[in-house]
Length: 222
Image (cartoon, rainbow, N blue to C red; front, side, top):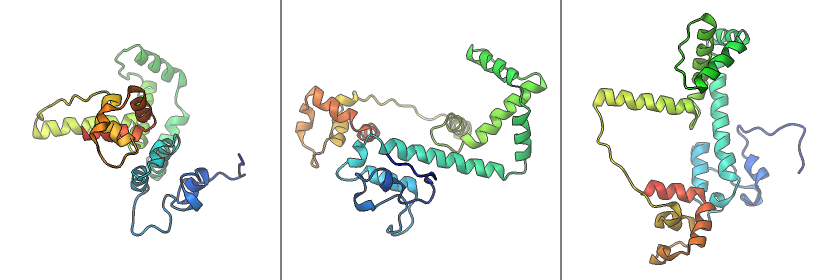
């Protein structure tokens, strides 16, 4: 595989995916953010639309879903990093990182891994905890990150405090290989027929494992 001396950019580069995966984009057309799109659409919305393509080639490709949404996380992290670098307190963040005591950080990490509840006492320990806050300022913008989940939990507890506890309910779903909706989404049949319930176990297993998008859609439909 050939490599250029200059890496390709993930930002504003409609030919990135057609160049990487020509089998998904015939004639090099249909890239993310290409000029043929009528109206305005975000890159994440276009990727979701491609995953719903009728022939399911984007769903079953082993690389496209992973690379497409990994790039979304990288772009969000880079954007948040640029925004943080423009803040007036960024000089303090850089100074804190440069003067961080690595031995204290390692000691705190080992104590936390053992399940100990750690509270900063010395100035060095407080600086380490402050760095975690600095990291959260960037990680909170990345979907699926631990920080974003922490912020979501804070939002949930805030809503419970303001509105009150919700009415909880449980949804029990069958295993993916026995889930008729998952199998239907993973199969290539356009019309829904009762035969979907009579798929052989090995056939259903192959359908479900080759199409994680269909499994996600089936679970959301339950």
